[in-house]
Image (cartoon, chains in turn cyan, green):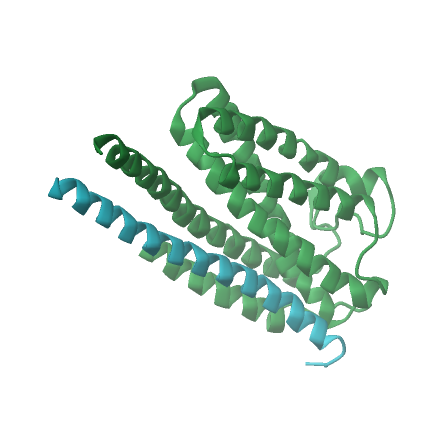
Length: 48
Length: 225
């Protein structure tokens, strides 16, 4: 593969993957945080 | 969900392989043109996401059912992720081809305006305090934002500047004059983008329901105090 403008190609494809992965990671982190929060609220409601 | 992830992962590998090794090198732009196989599917997925926002917002204003508001909220966020990808990959492709990162061209400017409208939409959702009024405002903003899509789409025909006119989807034909291997690569990338969108939307929709359930549970705890 000829290397001319390869840096731009790499940056273009990498930025696509980076944005998608960061967003997916953020969703996963937020989901697990809310699961914990919801479990704790449900526990508090059951304890009363 | 597992099936969707497995198919999506396979499609992502196929799209990357086709982009780097199967598609021919474009004669004038060289290898940097391969960004096209990620840039265009991201743009079409952005159209699809904001189309869903439009549909869900209209349905919410008509029926006032919370599920339409949930769908609009999830699709708006995922659409903004794809809009961000479009606004990043475009200038990276444009710099070696046009010699500049950005020009205030009709297509680029209208896409930036769309992105700003939906950033405002997401800020309203996150900091507006929730409730029926915010949902109604967001539905109206989502509809207004969607009206920018036809402007973006036809901007390259109405105002001829730097951004090229459509080559794959032209009125009356799809891919006329384009190398078939380029079209097949584009088709694989489109399938990949559609699967990625489905995955992100499913996860985000699930999260949106969880956010609302948590808020309702917190409200219940406060009321029982």
